Length: 98
Image (tube, rainbow, N blue to C red; front, side):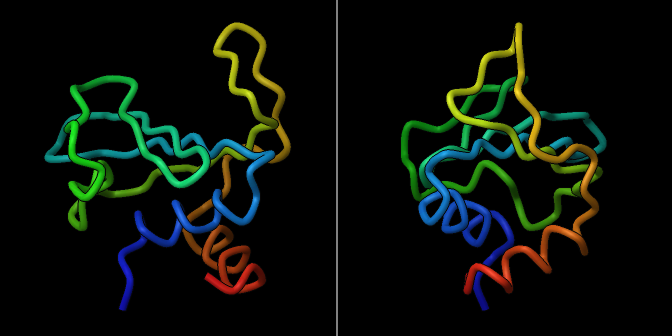
């Protein structure tokens, strides 16, 4: 079974007009992760140079997912949907076949 991080990356490959902004807790620390066109990047901690190293670990707790119009601009974000739960996002992943 594919990890949730991998599935979210695959979703953004199928929806290149979207950026996902994930609010998560990783090892007890807050993190924000963007996923765009199949690549993940943390906005709060260093991101590995190796794209095979998952930014969103299996132990991360996803608190909320925002869908934004690409390109992502932190100053003027254009939201499609805000505050999705993991179960709501899983339903979108199923609809998209990932």
